[in-house]
Amino acid sequence: MLKKLVNEAYFTLRITTTGPLLIRSGRATISGPDMTPVLTFRNGQQEIFLPGSSLKGVFRSHSEKIVCSLKPHVVCYPFSGSEEKEADLKQRQRDYRDSCGERFNKFAKIGDDERNLLEKRTDFVYDNSCPTCRLYGSTGFIGRIAIGDAYLASRSITEQRDGVGIDRLTGGASHGAKFELEVVSRDVSFETDIHLRNFEVWQLGMLFVVLQDLEDELIRIGSGRSRGLGQVTARVKDQDRADGRPGGFVISTMHADEEPENELWGLGRWLNDESYGTRKEDRLKAIPSVERKQRGIRSLRSFQGEAFNTLRDRAIADFVQRMQEWPEQVPLQLDAAHR
Picture 1 (cartoon, one colour):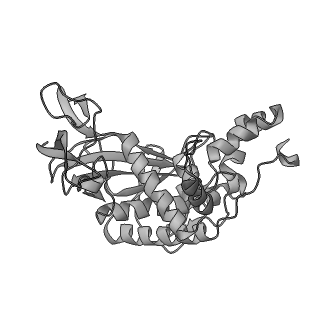
Picture 2 (cartoon, rainbow, N blue to C red; picture 1 turned 45 degrees about the vertical axis):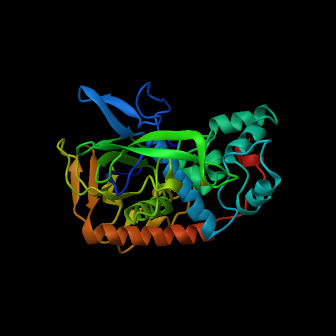
Picture 3 (cartoon, helix red, strand yellow; picture 1 turned 90 degrees about the vertical axis):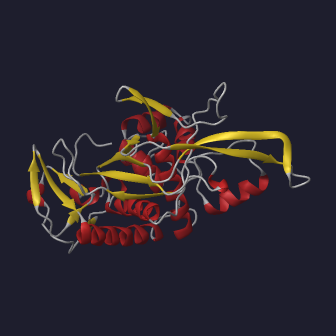
């Protein structure tokens, strides 16, 4: 999408466990626990980490729930199949749109013109995608957000816990169903880098909702969440990095002279032509004035403290309004502009 960069946002997120956490490796040890954390080779040794793909799945799933709570039938349901139960199907059809990926696949099968349109006109795909697919991506195009693996930022501590299967008839322990877990202990911290490019303002708001709920310990990650595992808190790291990259929530552009000091422009305002289904008034006005700093070809503004809180609250308000105004899903079709 787009062959240029108009705006970017990036930050380091520090995730700290407030209870035991397990993201399973999928492999049982020969003589140790049945379930163990995922490991990577780093700093000359094996370390526990949180995969970026797992974190992105958590972010996306929570975003879908939030949007569906604000207004049903705005986001798509990305997974469906013939084995889906009738009750689940009715529930999904009432609350969710059809999968964006499936819609584009069916559209491409109509004919060569339709397939060529999807391959050449990413503006058409983006315009006809639901809000979560616009931010996190689909089979039609890559998303606006990239979430890296979260590596240890403190000493690693693990502990073993016993688990047992429950007999559904007696309600007691099932014979021979005992298993062992190796979990990450509380007060262990991880850090990951998150990067957005060519974002709309409401997409910042969608992301800020997830960050706020993580900070408030309302989102659990990993396995065994119903058993009390996976409780974490998270915050945007304010400290500058050793490589000179500033901390806080950083907004970047290469055309700072066009954007007023007390405004933040989204993709629609930068394009200013309503292409890609964007809006010309895609901007936040009267935001805290933050000093711009030049880093290479980019002009950066780092939002921290009260400036960050104000930016977050304003972007969330824009997100809520945009979701409530989101149009109904319409059938995909060629028109004169796309032929």
